[in-house]
Image (cartoon, rainbow, N blue to C red; front, side, top):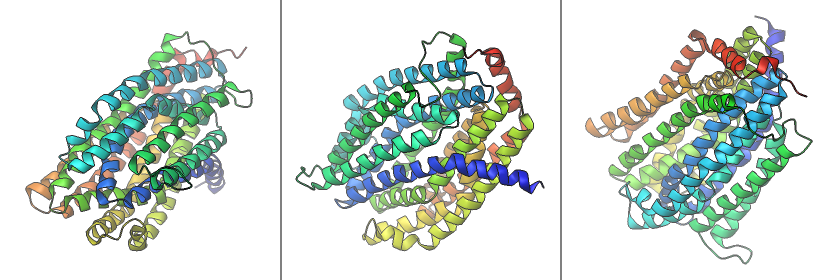
Length: 460
């Protein structure tokens, strides 16, 4: 093993992922703050926001889909020193995201109450959740612009600008959630509505900052007049499987949450699931997401420069480091799960289930890290179909299907759910590992670069 080479890749991984991790710390802290604030009101408020977030993640999935296309093309064209095609890909992706957010915003305003009612939740949960959905989804176009703008810049190797922008906006969001939710400093106590308004305001602020950053001279890309339909087609080829992957994951969450609510003590189980997952994400998401982005950048830029062997080596090296760090963080979180859950609630039933979910997610950390980093490597090569198939089969076949079979049909209750969740993450990790090692993603990337003229692009 070439240890010097491995250290070089790991150093670059840390350099690229560090700002992404720092940004994610603040982002997850914002979401954790939201859960903490609403937990002060009632378990029903936690359930309402948790169910509302299932719909609020629709813009996330669309934005990540188009952002996946932007980072793939941006990183490859940066590696090939082809600024012309890079800038057009970024501009087209942002326009697509802006337009795609409009129907989501309208749907949130018109159908928020019906969307929460499908879970069979109480009237209190429906009323509060519908308000939250309407407010947050109203800024779906801005959320898309934020996600695409961040990944466009990251593809060029600039992970610091997105960190600065998102850190500022998320700190504003945290302050808004606490102030408007709890009615501090003379503000009205709006509870869940206040939390939603803080998120919506931060979405608009962040989008404006990203557009300004890309238009400024201090960043590498710039806006151009979009003209090339080949680039638009390629963005969609990469983005659609990525977006459908996300939608499939969210779609599985709807019957899954309904399954949790159907058990005795259903609201306590559901609240425990929301708290447990949030704690795990707070502890490990910074490293996982940072390494996923770093893998996309490294693999994409190596392919752009024509070095397939380096792309393969870097994908494996980033995954190895991610597994080590996330695995260690997961074990630490498992050991501290009870006092960590106690920060959110003192309801005995909710605490019991939240601790179980924290430990489950913590022990699944190695599989989740493998899936995240290997998926990032494949996306850097414009290969989003394999992560889509891995996540979709895992979420519907095991996360939902096995949980329902074991928990409800066979009567194991929450224990069956724990088994279904763990099996899903192991399967997803194995599937993307196979895809990275056994499929022709490097050739696919080379073909797409040739189609859009990356190899001969002029920067004049």
